Amino acid sequence: MIDLDFTDTNRVLLRFGKEYHLSIINDGYGAPVLYEIGVFKGDKMVILPGITEDNDAVRGWLNEEKVRCIILKMFCITGCRPEIEEDDDWKDHFKQE
Image 1 (cartoon, one colour):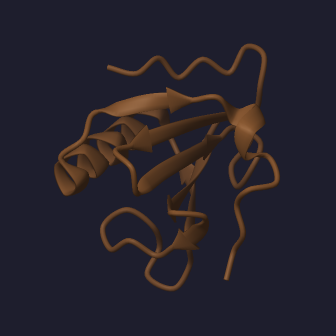
Image 2 (image 1 turned 45 degrees about the vertical axis):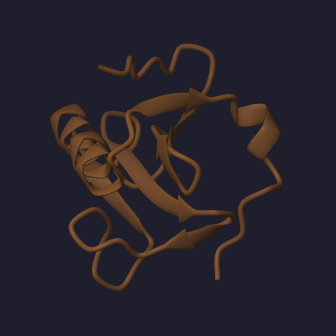
């Protein structure tokens, strides 16, 4: 399983195949103890039923167990194992529409 190590950063970015990314931050809704996630398809944030909120592309107030369940759901949806993406390459890449 992926190590959610926030030692040197406030964000972990996971890639699921070529299309999807899962952004996990520890300074969003529920910080500093809880996590917030967002799903990206390509370079756009998307609402993904069962992963994000119904009317929002992010989901906050998540404990580590819920985040790990979301990672497992993303694996089931995409059929791809998560890989850690280097966040520096994505700082200005994502856009929310």
